[in-house]
Image 1 (cartoon, one colour):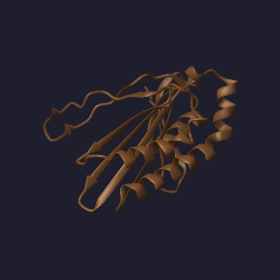
Image 2 (image 1 turned 60 degrees about the horizontal axis):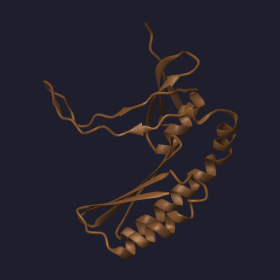
Image 3 (image 1 turned 90 degrees about the vertical axis):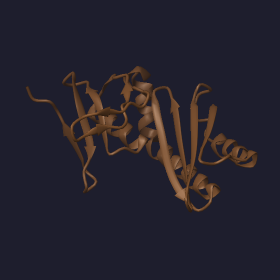
Length: 178
C-alpha cells in the first residue's frame, strides 16, 4: 500500500507517521499493493481532525474523526474503517468474484475552481469516471465513502441517476424524466 500523509496547519512528527503506518498496516493484507492511502490531519483551535481515504481497484473507503489529540482521532478512524470493511466484506467479495472490477468507478479529484454567479458560487468541482452500476452497488459505494448522495450510471436504465440517504435511514433514487 502506498501512503500519503498530509498535515494542514500542523507539522506532523515522525512518531505520528510511524503510528499511521502501523495502524493502517493491518489493512495491507486486505488491499492490493497498488492501493493508495491518503491521511490528512487538520488542526483547528482545540480540535484535531484525521481523515483517511483508501482507494483500491476502483473502490473507495473513507473515514473521518475529530478529537483533542490526533492519536485518538487516528485510533477512531482506524476503528471506523475496520467496521466498514467488516460490514461490506461479504458483499464486496461476492461482487468482486461475480463481476469484473470495471463495474465500479473511482473518484478522481479535479482542481478547485471558483465560478462566480449572480447569487451563487461554486467553490469546488469534482470530475469522475462513470461506469455502469446497479442501484445496490451505488448505495454500497455511497456508504463506503461516507456521503449522503451518490451519482452513477444506472446499469438497468443506462441513464445518470442519484441515490441518497433519507432522514429515516432509508434510501431514495432520483432518475431523469424526459
